[in-house]
Amino acid sequence: MKEADRVSLDAVIEMAAALRGSQEALREKPYFLHLVTPLPVNLARIHSEQIIIAARAGIPVGVGTLPIGGASSPITLAGCITQALMTDFATVIPGQLAAEGSFCVGCSDVNFMEPATGAIGSFSQTPVADMAMCQVRGALGFPSLTGTGNFFAHQHMVGNCLFQV
Image (cartoon, rainbow, N blue to C red):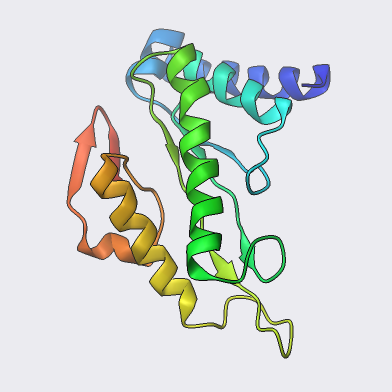
């Protein structure tokens, strides 16, 4: 991670702690969710370091990629979903190793490219993929912060964080 990027993230965490009154108060009641957006199946060092820094500071982390079937990912539902979930599940590991029990979840959204026009997100596969990803996450016990399928899910509170299972 570039020094400027680290300084920026540290500064945001410091400001949030000041707003809450202390680092411990921020840990108990996070002020923001840090969103990390890697490319599909590509967790760069800058992304890993952001996850680790935020998890150690007690900041909830959402990590999500935007695979586009037919462009950055396979055009099939299975291929695009697999790339999204691979990225989501791989990003939980650095967060849990840095701070066991930290709130670090995948929140990838799947889209598809219309082969004839190049339009993105117009296929009926997009909501089907979202619902399938929510089902897979739920079956494996991973919370989901995304997807149209979440309206079928149960809501749970962990500390002050609401998430879908």
